[in-house]
Amino acid sequence: MIDDAQLAAIARECRVQIIRMLTHAGSGHPGGSLSVIDLVTTLFFQRMRHDPKRPDWPDRDRLILSKGHAVPAVYAAMARAGYFSQDLLITLRKLGSPLQGHPDRTALPGIEAATGSLGQGLSIAIGMALGLRSSGSPARVYCIMGDGEVQEGQVWEAAMAAPELGQPNSPLDNLVVILDENRIQLDDFVAKVRDIEPVAAKWKAFRWPVIEIDGHDVGQIKKALDEAEAIRAIREILGVTDAAWDDYLKTDTATRALVAELSALEKK
Ligand SMILES: Cc1ncc(C[n+]2csc(CCOP(=O)(O)OP(=O)(O)O)c2C)c(N)n1
Ligand SMILES: [Mg+2]
Image (cartoon, rainbow, N blue to C red):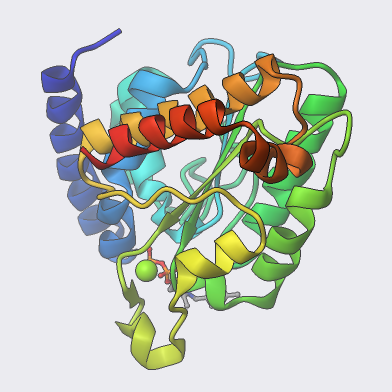
């Protein structure tokens, strides 16, 4: 496991590679890519269980980059992790390259889903998480979405469905959704195109536990990912289903205090 200073150096290196790739390509999405780079490098180098030498390992954690236009961030991290040579990075967006402008799972081992048509990744991630859970796999699914992207109707159909799916025997707690709220979408501010606020309250209303963090602060990213896991672990130990958890916490004051204590850790 690498330390935080090494992780910061890797993220810096990947930022440079993103600019290099996009300059060679002459097109692409620098903002959306740079905006997720700390999230992507933290996942690849400190949290996801994966093996660059075995991209088809059945129990690997999966990353679904629903905002597929930001894939240069994932390519930079994959190359750095050893999935393929860094020399390949400058073939981004070239005809015949496995590094297409949007992720293509048939072209590059390690890419989990073809995304780029915004709004679809969460549905894919939910399906994968359900399949993995039903087959007894310990793998987790991480889905990264954009804030402009959540204007798409399909996102809310999926968000509404997820807390209901897999109940009561296979709760969908192997899925982590990361919403990159950079407030920009392509050519204008999200608030000007179609305001999504209060976006955290909307997810909460659909019964998702929400943690708000600075997506460039690696300490906060790691705490948030761990917290999601710690609370899930406590719920599982107590044998409470996801659906019953809120009601359970109303009755068990000691556990409620413990969950509040763990939530407070993230805010430090
Ligand atoms: C269905 C669909 N409509 C439009 C586009 C074109 N498009 C590409 S990136 C983008 C902006 C996305 O904004 P956001 O989700 O906030 O991502 P960011 O780049 O800010 O990370 C749009 C509209 C698309 N890829 N898919
Ligand atoms: Mg955005």
